[in-house]
Amino acid sequence: MKKIASLLLVSVFAGAITLGAYKLFFEKESYKWVTSEEETPLVTTSNLDTSARGAGINEVDFTLAAEKTVNSVVHVKNMTLSRGPSSIAEFFYGYERQQIPQVGTGSGVVISPDGYIVTNNHVIANSSQLEVTLNNNKTYEAEVIGTDPDSDIALLKIEAENALPYLAFGDSDNTKIGEWVLAVGNPFNLTSTVTAGIVSAKARSLSPTRTQSFIQTDAAVNPGNSGGALVNTNGDLIGINTAITSQTGSYVGYAFAVPSNIAKKVVEDIMEFGNVQKGLLGISAANTNSPTAIEMGLDQLEGVYIAGVEEESGAEDAGLMEGDVIKKIDNIEIQKFSELTGYLSAKRPGDVVQVTLDRDGKSLVKNVTLKKQNSVILPATAFRVKNLSKEDIKKFGVSKGVKITDVPQGYERYNLKDKIIVEVDGNKVNNIEDAKKYFGEISRYGRTSFTMINQNGEKEHMILQ
Image (cartoon, rainbow, N blue to C red; front, side):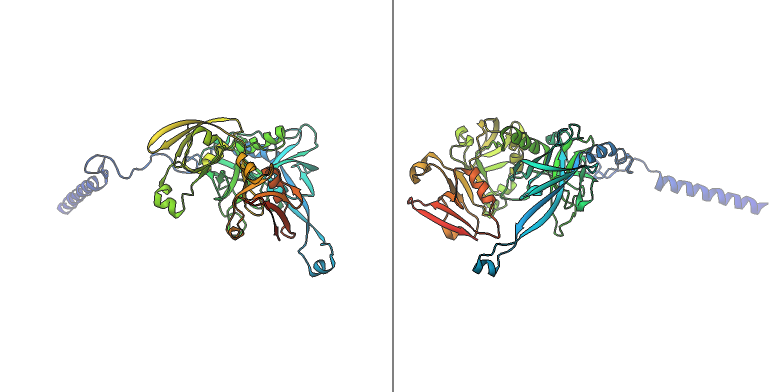
């Protein structure tokens, strides 16, 4: 009996020790990592459910947007005829090079019930015949209504029943980073393919020499998706899928779309005017990655540093100056050049924008009337040319032509800068629109000659081959 009592006493004592240890080490409350100054936790843990459903992923329904979009996205087939490379027989005997048929494919988006279709310019470039296939497998021949190589947007038209499914343009300015989107197109000729992702970035530029402002997404996009739709979960068109960045030629996580506000403006201009009406501020911006800019601290700048102001531009008229920093346009904050160009791409000549500047630490507000494009970078050569000013006409003794204001590396030794191009392959060049057209027709298999007027008023000829 004594042994049983002793055993019971030992058990009670051991239980008490165990309970005390549990209270001491496992039931302490309100322990937090805090600073010596404030009782603020350095690391906090959310009480929210972090499962897929709790994070909201499974709450997004893509089905309605997908169903709406696949019936409005078309397959575009581009048939071209190109000449083969030069041969010895052609050189000696004048044999004509054989025309080689080629077929390219892409996507397009129906934007009206009567058959207007928006796509990329590179999808339909140099076409001799265009064929469009709807999601119901009906095929139509398409007509090119107009193109804009700068934004890589083209407008097509098919003669179809006035009851085609189509997509409405959404407001791409309201698109937010992290928002769910769908990419719909025809990659690798796989029709009506839908992929999902999020908006990874906005106002993304892929080239230092072009005024680009893409929506970046991680929705899978591959060759054949070009010209297809980027839509939000409502099925509103917020972009035209255009490019990928890849070392393999296939999707590796980065895809880019022309924002819908830019595409819509291009389409409206083509329909109303037959070409794109670009309202320009008239400035050049500094390359913030250059050694000089880094030395000046411009790489840390939030805003657009004005490196130059064009003659007879809206910026010059409003008093913008080299060294000014653009901080806002119409009360929209601007942190980089692609944001500025993206906003202005939806404007036309004659529109007035309010520009907020920082000049030597002082904030200024200027109203700038946008003007027509006065300079362009020419295809094939990358020459920058501008329309003639009154001073140019008087100095060179010509009334029409374009003035070369800048040339890329490799052409400097030819001393082309400030000369006037007046003719390309026998075609008279009146303005920058003519120059863009004729230089855009240059073939890498042929040779092109153009005529210039130098500073002494003398004619010079140059042959590209």
